[in-house]
Length: 220
Image (cartoon, rainbow, N blue to C red; front, side):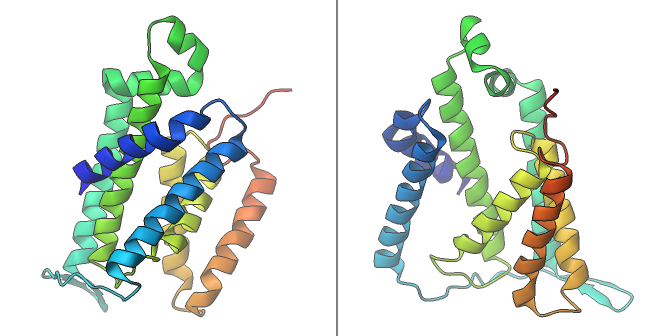
């Protein structure tokens, strides 16, 4: 799954995304949105919009009056492991340092011999690969259709902006906070109200932290 997502990410980058690098942000948004629509169209034609379910179960744990299913525990453990590996990759490996250098200052990175286009392609492909792994984990927990990704796109957008764009640690913190929030309020309100509360808190948080919880602060 991860390998397939990585290859698909490289192809999408060189076919669609590379052509809009350096242009207005709206161009990148439209290009990726167009790719998304193509994927949804092809997926709908191939698999329809019928729900699917991955029959996968493992023994769970019982703690007081709560039951933690094995699939949820494994998914949580794998998510933590992937986050740790990504942090180590960005922090200690040569390609990871190149990604950080390009993100910090693309022109300076190119001056010292780093190919920004290749680094951006690697970053984009890694993002698609991690998204594919996340989708596979979610598929073991909940029924899904080809259109199920929409709700997770909105959540990921909130997490990325809340944590601070370009800050992996901030994104991780934002995801944890959002997950805790969902788990805390779900027993007391209808599920349909969760996105409303999330986006309301999202707006409030941006008013207090315009660059996100751990985003770069602009000095006046």
